[in-house]
Image 1 (cartoon, one colour):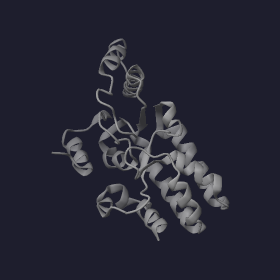
Image 2 (cartoon, rainbow, N blue to C red):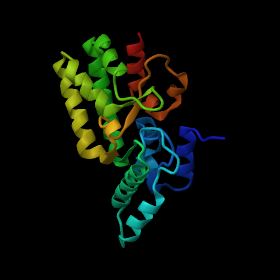
Image 3 (cartoon, helix red, strand yellow):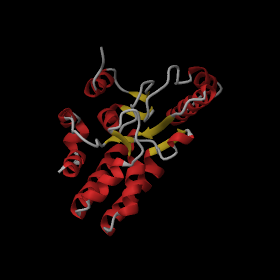
Image 4 (spheres, helix red, strand yellow):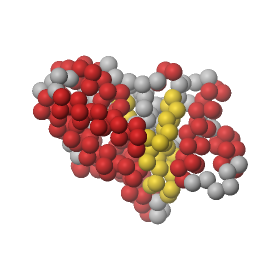
Amino acid sequence: TFITTSQLALALREAGGVDIYASDASLMQMMEVAYEIRDTIGYIAGSEETEPLDAFGYPYFFKQISSDTYPTPLQAGIYATEAYALNCQAMSVPYTYSLIDAKMLADFSKLIDEWTAAAMASGEAAAIKKVRDNGQKFGNPDNKDLYAFIAAVNGVTASSNLRNKGRTLLRFMSEKLVKANRVSDKYRQARGVSIYLPDWKYDPAYDTLQFSKDGSWDEFIKWLAR
């Protein structure tokens, strides 16, 4: 069996929420997942990429957290991120793992909406498609690293408005949203959060997610497809 993204949010809400939600599962550190559970979580840790077996690094995590008498939720989340990286390094497997501040997601989603409006107003769909197709992908090619994508669009756009919106979004990600990010060389462009950005077919189930309902990212994807 499996749990859907909306069911995950329901389970956490019914449980009363937690200070840290750390995924030991593949492809979970997505904007859509984080936004769905944002109201019941303090910090969200997870991997943008698929996970190898025994990836989380529980021995490293418990060793770090047991040496800290009163770790804050933020510090515990950082320990989880470091433990994942240390364990994958010991296994010599590529990895991504990051920690984001759920309290920042409401403001972050507004900045994304401002960026998508500027992108669609630019009329540069062809150039943005090329950036999309060449972006940092993961085990599911529909997932792209958001920071790398926005930065690459900034490098090709002729729109000063789009470029300024992109700079604001990137600065917010690096300074406020992402609190820790550990990656191997293979994923050096990955900066902590992936997002749904399919090269080809749009999945209509995406429309049921709260991020899609509240924002305009789905409209941006459809605009690119047209």
